[in-house]
Image 1 (tube, rainbow, N blue to C red):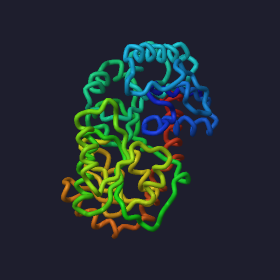
Image 2: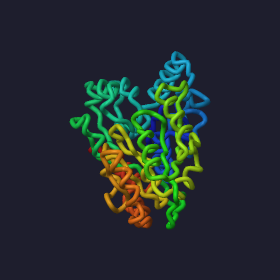
Image 3: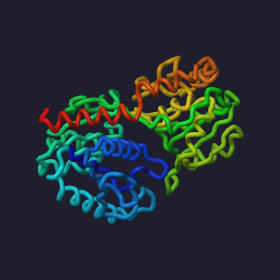
Length: 343
């Protein structure tokens, strides 16, 4: 099949450090290339891919200190570059909201995977337009569908990761780890309180957006004032060893996380996850087997003391059985084949 993969131009594919969406786009793209499909990736010029790369900008724009007028102009050029070539593809796999503006002019099979909470105002406004309703969607968890249950979904396809690229540690470490972004919806303050109450070291490996928000300033001050916390900032490949050598990973999310790639990245190393029971967490974490689902800070603190009862081998096995890279790519290939045949 001739497949177009459409990414944003804020991040490279794959991302240099933080960027779960671009990581998944890269994994799907490269997996389809290995299956001998003719894939064209519409992304930034600094992206790394075995597909044909189409780009209108040499580098990812990022989110900090960006001239938004220039960013908008480049996005228009990005979409125009795709639109001029759209007729040559059998399948158009879209990952961004802005592409829906082109739907009335596309005659090919158009399917969208979005990687966000669909309850946000922008998603709600765009996805309820007639243009969006005439296309089809792949959800990344069943929980993601709850905000817009009437969208024409084809299937839920969970994210997958290259299992062999992650180390496995049967012996558990001593520290807790938080990996994500310093934003209110990630709830890092709950992780800090859990560390204080359990007396365990907490390593916070997190991206801080610039300019600093009032919340970020407050959290950075909290880290400095809490002896149990070691803040190491944003991490790249080193996150694999960081996760593998942890006692447990904390996910005190304050929003309905649509998937949470870092959860399966922790589990594949053998590290259990303690998460708030929100969004996709009950679909990923097997209660009492690969981690614990909680609803309060106290429950998270209590769960830390139960982690020693878990078998780290079971954590890795759950990823091998449910979240492998091959499973994800094969699932997308099956959906695309059905669409190309006029399903």
